[in-house]
Length: 112
Image 1: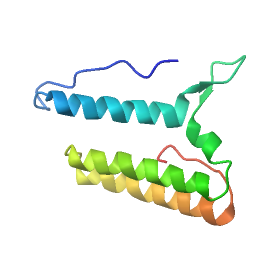
Image 2 (image 1 turned 90 degrees about the horizontal axis):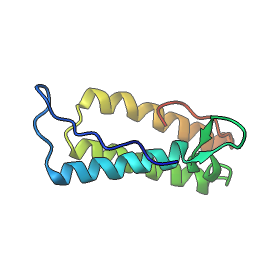
Image 3 (image 1 turned 90 degrees about the vertical axis):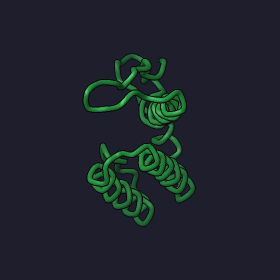
């Protein structure tokens, strides 16, 4: 499996992307793909990511997941993603990881 194809986000709403922004976005897309859908499940069209496997290790797995999610949110903030979008993403990630870390569960939501 390959990460999603590169798309240039330019147009009336967004200004032209610089090469540095393109590289950061490509790195974040790769990280999201790696964490969420990089491993195909044999015999199905489904995929899982490293986040699910790392999450099997108590505490350390959740800590790595929180760090990766925090890195993605920090980069999104640096790239100028709106505060509303960041505010919608942050609580889901924090609540899910806090819940999973304290209970030992590995329940995932689309936000984190």
